[in-house]
Image 1 (cartoon, rainbow, N blue to C red):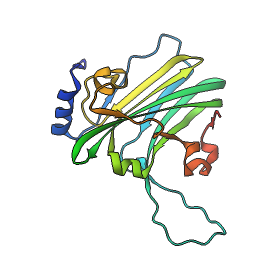
Image 2: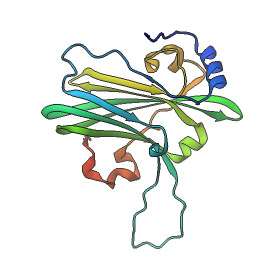
Image 3: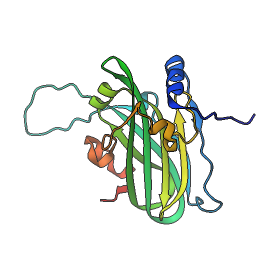
Length: 213
């Protein structure tokens, strides 16, 4: 059965989100890129829900003595993908996250974005691209409800995919002005961090591609 997507104004959507909550997962696949444009890149999966998405701050041994600090819990967003060319000079990922929480007792919506470029990507399966939200960001503004990513090669979008934990008015919600442009949604720049901006930068370094400075 072919899926149908209904476009509506965000206030009605917010009511639906409130009623439905985050009780089910709906995966939304955007239209594929033009024929041949994305032959080098193939999505494997998105990871951002469940236990794997919650990761504690890594602890390093140092010569500086300190008291015991309880590690915070970060929210991790993972894109796993394959490449077919022997070497890919550069891929750029645009990450989009929609969060739902409460501020001063009222339902609040946050929209986070990040743009990260990776270089010198060897042919292979299971490449990883990640971004993070800080523990205090999650505590203050609420949990993620949707995650989307677009991949660009030489300025052309070659792949895109999204997953949502609740219904949204559009399968490309991050481009829908009724969602991200609503007065009820606050855009929070520079909150979504790439791996090099976090304490995870030195953890399992060889499992991740090099971030372009």
